Length: 275
Image 1 (cartoon, one colour):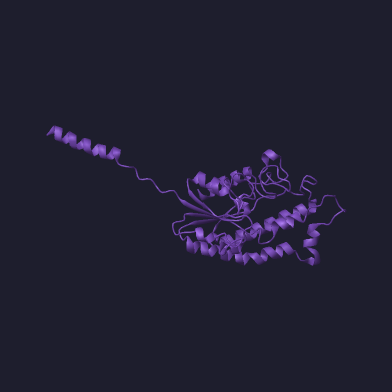
Image 2 (cartoon, rainbow, N blue to C red; image 1 turned 30 degrees about the horizontal axis):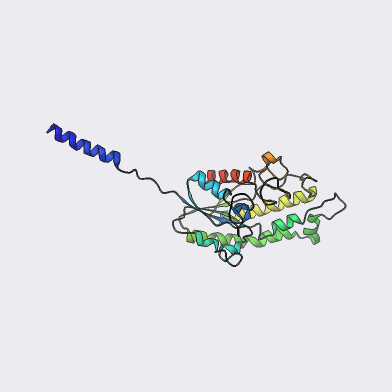
């Protein structure tokens, strides 16, 4: 009898030891957005049409979260590319969303207002009065053209968040803010933008960020602040502290975009926001 009981206990214990431990499935993460998330020119480039880096912030965040990533960020993307084919052949970014999606990050809006082209138009190789202030040009006649573009883009951005909730109803949606590209008064001539124009450009980015935050709140998305943590890591910062590149990048990255160092920092911030 004793041997029978011991044998039965042994069989039960063996079952406990050898039975596989159920593990939670890795969360499914979809990254939507433009070049601020894609990471153009940062090696390794894993998708050439979209200039998408394998160490952009979605990849960094996914690694930290232990998530399965579907990264459809694409350089040059505008809001209509979420639902339409970018370049005529890149699938709509919404196609990546599924009911099983757990986390979605969104980085869009800069191309819709022409932010990079506006910044490039602010270059002045000579100090005043040799050139023309881009602030004066964009605000001539008493109307701020870039501010008007941001205001006009707001409804489209807000409406672009709604299908995400419909296609991925169980997902947390996080909208990432654009960073601090240039410090107060800039650093002319290292970055050849006059102080008045440097302040105007960052104020424009801040206005865009405010719009994105307001629309995110109105449409039930979480907003991730990349602006505040990147103060002191702008294009004027020493190379070892720089997260955002200037007109002439100091590392393999596109001008006026995050560097690999910046992507690593932003990925950590996004992962922390997801929790």
